[in-house]
Length: 123
Image (cartoon, rainbow, N blue to C red; front, top):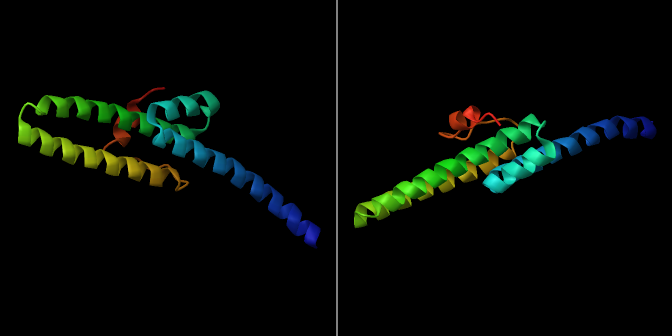
């Protein structure tokens, strides 16, 4: 009886292990942005779950670069530039944290405001 239970649990453990790898790669894809995308792309680009979050991390990085450039331009106006830069920076931090949390969920969820851009990346 115990052998049957052990045999039944083995396949579940194996699938959970592969799911853990996907989850870890998804986390790396969001957490490390460009480097994470490259890691996921080179290691396991056929894993839809990991690539979904790797693309989201890359899209978030692209948006962050655009925001950084825009905030540097806005620094011409001292107070306004600082306020806008701070608000946008906090917003990007929140989106990044949401992406990290979503990557551990086991479901493909889009990071708000970033998901549409990530879907347009044909990589």
